[in-house]
Image 1 (cartoon, rainbow, N blue to C red):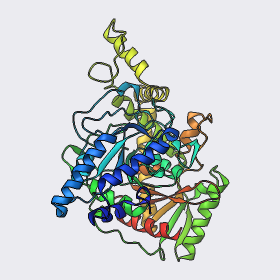
Image 2: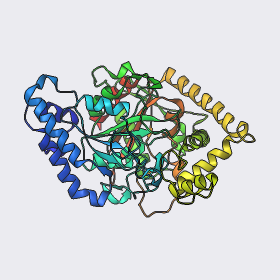
Image 3: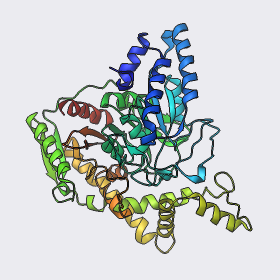
Length: 474
């Protein structure tokens, strides 16, 4: 097997056994990037020289002290460009932060580097993680490696594309409403969103504080779990990070026999591409043949999930975006006749249309006259949705659905924002409830689709164990 097609666990083992050098691994990925990056546009900042230098140092470490090699020695990662890597530009795919260089390291980057991972670059995303296609990026769309006429999904589209194109072993993204799982589905890779609070968000740009969670995109479930073990843990710099002990144990493939799985009844009537619906039905047949029980279950709040999600998320992101004012950091307009003009022009020039749209909606929602009608009501419904999921998990082990109701759309296809938002119907409830979920690829007659499994909060290990079994079955 070629280096670039090897999985993280394979590369780590071969590297520690001395079968390949880190310099050879990095060079192999850089050659692949050189061959395909022009048609995909996955990277905002390619860290070629930094990766080569780090690889040479790691080879020296292996020669002198092989027993001190970290858990990720041999593994090459790409990082979504809303995560701080000290001394490397962190643009959030926006003109507003086009030249911003963070003077500190995100907690997860400290953890990855401590385990000898090599970072090969910062990858593209929707601007400030607002979008589902990377088409809102100031640096242009990231195209799907499986069909370069189509989008890679978003907001972690660069992460998914970099894994699918074999530009890296795995990638670190963030998931606010499906931003790891949907692009994973579009690009035919595995995407995991762990339980909210499992991983520190210190050094990760906040979009919506009660939704955002760092996730992993990889070639298979075992690789994703292996990297999550490194990332998970409490952090005194992030009060929401409580860790997740369940992610630390070994991953065992769980038998599918005896599993009780719920499918939202909405699946029967929700508009989706025929091949997606057929794919879910095929998976259900395979599961029942293995002895699992699969039932259609009514969800009273699922059809309201997208509405409550966008009300709460936009209500949270609007004040988060207020820090970008052209004064402390970020893009500063030359129109500076007054402080108000500086604010207005800097934001008008620095933000794209989708970011402006969501700031305006969020500001409207959070205004004194509307907060009770919209935001408070959405919070009440969120609580009801959380309770509903908890009741379902009393009787069922997991919830099964398509990750996305459609295949990746053409990059030139015009879609209304509402059409794009509705495509997140099956992913946003996971973030509303703060629970865990995974998207694993399933082949169809054309492009692969994503199969989403949703687990209970802090039972990520059980979710991944079942996903490993389903992955083998498919």
